[in-house]
Image (cartoon, rainbow, N blue to C red):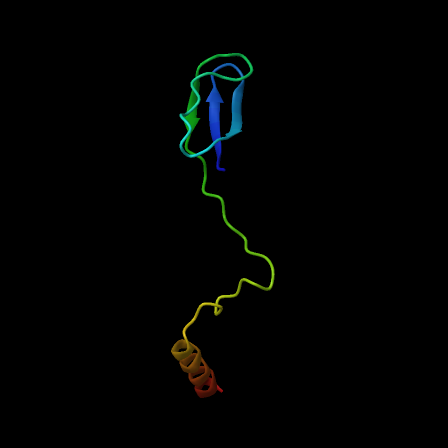
Length: 74
């Protein structure tokens, strides 16, 4: 579930985990004051582990051309 950022006029900024299909909040959960939904910065995704490598999904033709290019460079 995504985390959305809101700004309360009284309490300041806070985050709320919601379903995409959920309606945006209109009141602050702490003070019941009005809130606005903010547009947050994009979050970079970091893939870790041996399962994520740039050539994992490459075609065999691409791999062959890559080997040829490397051989030509040396």
